[in-house]
Amino acid sequence: MPTPTPDSPNSDYQAFVQLLVSHEARLRSFLRALLPEWTDVDEVLQETSLIAWQKFGRFERGTSFMAWIAAIARFEALDYLRQRGRAQRVFSPEVLALIADEAVARTEPLERERQALERCLEKLAAAQRELLL
Image 1 (cartoon, rainbow, N blue to C red):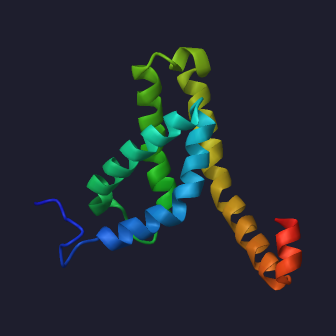
Image 2: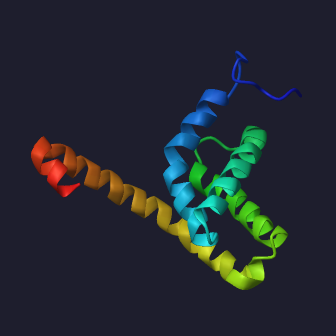
């Protein structure tokens, strides 16, 4: 089966990009919990995005995209650390697995809180909102 492209009429490209963009901030935070530097996060996020696109046909619509892509990101982060010899200096694979599991478990409640905060901020006058931000 050929790989879909952004120009394909029956492509899932638009749905994938929308999901990826809407979850990017949380995915970056998740990766930062596992990786020592932001530059590492950028590299692993790029690789994770490519792999997720290649596997997007296997993603079950209606399930948590964040949990699905975080699982991919977790494996990519561990592989990245192993390749660079950093896994031993940072955390053991077991500790990284625990951190990853906890980070995924916290993403949904934190996102709900962030959305509630945004709704509250929208109710403020522009000057008040600017002051708080």
